Image (cartoon, rainbow, N blue to C red):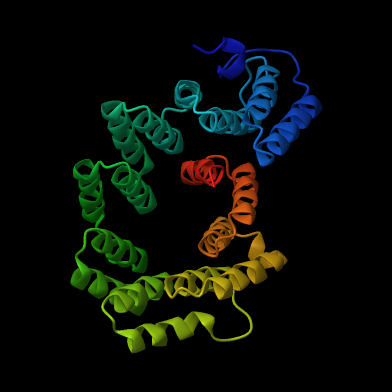
Amino acid sequence: MLPAALCVLLLAGCGGVDREGQTKLRNAGIAALSQQDFEGAQKDFSEAVSMAKGRVTDAEIDLTYYLAASYYLQDRYEDAEQCYSNLITYDKDNADAFFLRGSVRLDMDESEKGLSDYRKAVAVSGDDYELYIAIYENLTALGYQKDAEPFLESALTIGGDGADNYYYRGRIYMLLGQDDLAKTAFIKAMDKGSDEAGICLAQEYLKDSEDESAKDLISRYTAGEKKDARQSVLAGQLLLDLGEYEEALSVYEEALKDEKTATGAYRADLLKGKIAALEYNGDFAKAKDAASDYVEEFPADAGMVRELAFLNTR
């Protein structure tokens, strides 16, 4: 059990918080994470949380996610689990915390508790297709295929006839191996203006050896001198699918150099694409550095936390 001062969030407390000192500890913890000093990072984040004296602001919530990640990277799963439990105690509708705690519990071989958390995550998240898909992929990776498919089947019941609805239905059909239904959904999504559906449709064409049809779609995203962030994400992914790893890396790096492109909603996707391209190129040292930087910026991304742990073994 964790000492209460390390990771307990309560709606109480009085007196000021040394925000400057807390920020210094946060920055020190992030620096330690980037150097793979996970124990040092954990100590910094723990001290920073304890400085709040029971107060809860966005700063404490942010620090608790970092603290959980630092525990996870030390294989201290019970401590990471407690951090996420504290976040849930504070906010019972925190879908991210339920999802992350469920993932940790699965790593602890507590499958029933993990599955229960996943069910709670989707119950409080609303119609979040990405969450359903992330849960499916996590469960499949851990060998829980039988438990994974019902989450996708539930996502198919969301309904709707917008571009996003068709796009996500197509992705779900892809995962379920229902390729004809996937193609139909992606074509409908594209007709309604979804550029993202094009990458998935191209993947379907490539899988079926319909190379010319795939190339026609790829040209939408690779042609031209300038691309917005979304187009760069799509172009990079298509190039990865084609095995053009160096070209994909160039697309991601070019986009990340542009201030407008690199700071928007697609920043995380661009960074993850860059990490994937580096891995495919066999440059594991640079991939590890990039993954460390990513975890600093997006500590709640459990998938990348696990990826960083993998890269530390290469």
